[in-house]
Length: 181
Image 1 (cartoon, rainbow, N blue to C red):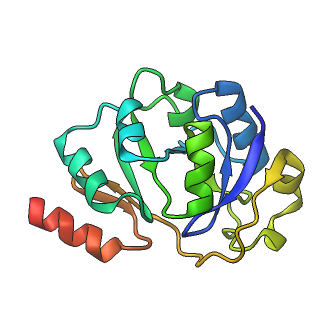
Image 2 (cartoon, rainbow, N blue to C red; image 1 turned 90 degrees about the vertical axis):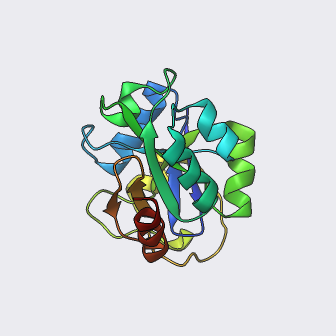
């Protein structure tokens, strides 16, 4: 139930058990983030994502096309995904980072929160030396993977054909949506 800071191929993430409402609450507290603003869930593989979601064919195809990678795929959540993670919504963002250290962590822990390791409203962290004091105090561990590129993931809802946040690989995701739609 404790927090961990971990590197991804985009920025450093703040993780806690994504299926434990109390652990999720600690992430919101550490970030100073509104509980109405959902968190994404990091998993180690597409099959792990599918075991915690009710992804339709388009979401599954999007996951297969872009994950692991710097894309967050929004799809219908499974029954084990708590309201605390999604702000009560019926959808959840799924992230599979393309980073060996993050994938090893996810394989060992199961689903964890996939949100940037910074206070809400401040810049994303690209190096462990830049982790703010509130996050550092809240985290039980920091996994040092060196510097990260710093471009956030693209957030896409493939079932609705919408990009919610342009980030890494946004043009490729947009082209993929256009081909399907």
